Image: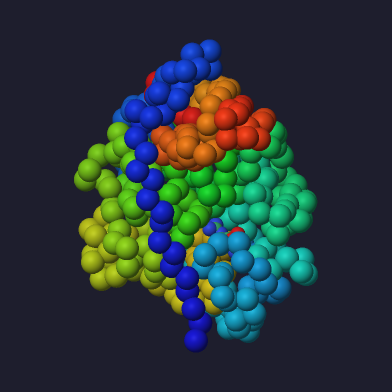
Length: 400
Ligand code: ARG
């Protein structure tokens, strides 16, 4: 029998008070505005949300010729090595392709042997207008895909801008534009599992849009597109338990309650949020009757199609697609980049960091407060009466 692993989350009962105390001892480097999510400006509604798009959306897909589960890089893959049925996967992909091609222009890329996840082209990078930002994979297994995607997108006349530095960015899998008529578009961007927070600062610069950083806290929802889908009328479908509490506040600050479609655990684990929306049709591999009704009330027709072979690798409909156009107004060149709310700073910790558990609590607290860290130096005390010293580089979204 095919097994799907559903790990449970560890609890992190560390309070922000503790974070405050740790950092208060280090006044030079403290950014007192550390918080995840950033400021709370309201997102304007689209002027005419249901207005049909003038031209067909353009989607890229990559044929699953070499698809298979050959390693484990997310919980869905655990125990599934060698279990995907290649012929069935191709049939399922063909059916998805045919459904999408009814309402979109679909451009198909041919894959490269020995790269079994290449069909998940959402992770190739992110496109806006003629700019393509290639992924920087956190997982080494997928890094060799990047030059192939890059070359293919360059052949389609996209200009490449890169995420520099050492922050991972796993493309549209972790970055979804919100449909909006606003002059400054909004990009929902996930971090904490596969993409790093610092990549969001660079995305703000490149795409000159507001980037709302959302911390993913459940390994099963390891990419943003597994737990969140912007809807064409300005609504947002998402699975709340996949996000840190400050990230939920950031969502609430931007999306009024009536426009939030919160999905059940059952729907979320069925990959309902991993949906491709073309016009008023939402294509996913699963949606409960209740969810279909909710979406129908918003004018969306839901079509489901089996993709269980791909779920063995942790992906479904949206993962198999990369949008080559976005539902946001342009031109990009006419906009100024807003200031990114992400701040970085160094914190030095000295004391009995290991034997009293201080180190663990400090790192948990940083993470819990929406930050991410890198240890730049660590000198452990070698005897129980000797203190340890550690220098951390911390990044976090600040409140505006
Ligand atoms: N096995 C792939 C990985 O773990 C699945 C990628 C799914 N893609 C996505 N956009 N969520 O990288």
